[in-house]
Amino acid sequence: MLSELLEKYNKENFARFHMPGHKSFFNFGINNINNIDLGYDITELDCTDDLYCSNGAIKYSENLISDIYDSGFSVFSTGGNTLCIQAMLYLAVPNGGTIIIAKNAHKSVISAMGILNIKPIWINCNDNNILYENLEYELKKHPETKAVFITSPDYFGAMVDVKKIRLICKNILILVDNAHGSHLVFFENHPISLGADLCADSAHKTLPVLTGGAFLHIGKKFSEINNIKYEDAKNAMQIFASTSPSFLILVSLEKCALWLKNIGKTEFLKLKKIIQEIKSKYSKILFKSNIQDPVRLTFDTSSIGLDNQEFIFYLKKFEIMPEFGMDSKTVLIPSPLNNLKDFEKLNSALENIIAKKNKINYKINLETKNIDFNSKISIHDAMFSKNKKILVKNSENKISAQVIAKCPPGIPVVIPGEIINKQKIDILEKLGINYIRTVV
Image (cartoon, rainbow, N blue to C red; front, top):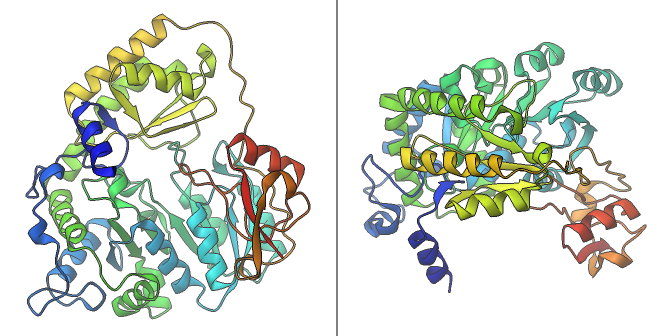
């Protein structure tokens, strides 16, 4: 049973370097995650506010977030970052059209584009950063472009220069999936402050929020020029959301807003100092990019002869549970709610692993971020087509009716509408995916 599995994990005393950011401990008003007061789990009543028609306590808390992030306004989501992405795309491209999008977009973006009949123009990434010359080229080639969609930071902590994107895009809308960067407001690197028009923050990933809690930020300039109001954002959310939002998640978002306002910056600066010490000590086995999240830990262990599975095996022996691994990279997501004991465990594990390292370089043989999407029909038409489930090994030259991505990190390998080739079949089989839905 699920409850038994979770109870077993809780008893194993792992240092949680994975989502969510609360690390199973709330110290600002909500009980411990293992004993949450279920009295908070209610529905909309006369005595409570309504998430999608807020004019009371919820709106007050959203205003706190808007003040912290300096947005035109911000709204809460209890449907995760996926709901924020859906609403964001609806606000920017409500009637379909063309957007330029980097290939490291999350699979939820693909599904939202299919629903809204949005046509993607794909641009490549380099070390998980956008190749800016590609963006300039595609903007000139596609003057009909309505928006540019970027993911920053990505799962590995690599970040895009949003200011540079703003200069390139001029008056084209910039949409940012900032799922992993809610905390960047304290490092003067949040997309809204750098010129993004719309930004989705998956708050639970790095902040002390229950899973499913997220923020959608609407930029001041976008709101003014397009006459987008608070109620419009709520309506966009409501189109895709459940009519029964979780008040448990809402309470955690409210408590987080107060925590961010009062001590959030102090706590994240403390965390940054701890992470800088780890990065300095183990710099030879760290993933590096031009711009990086200051508090994300991504290890690249190819130089010491370990792939992610071997590295994670050693981490678990020292009671360290990472977020995920891919190829030779392993991602750990620290937050201010990790305690000093967690970091002591991590340091012991890394010292032990380094001491036992071998000299054989591990060669990365699977790269998914720059795979081509050979589309035959639109995402929308493929998603809503008549389709059937077949074996992956029999799918060559057929058209995919679904998005396929290993999650995490959720970056698509196959998207709806593309012709499946031998390369894609090989990758899917390596990922252990045996079936796929194809257009009939």
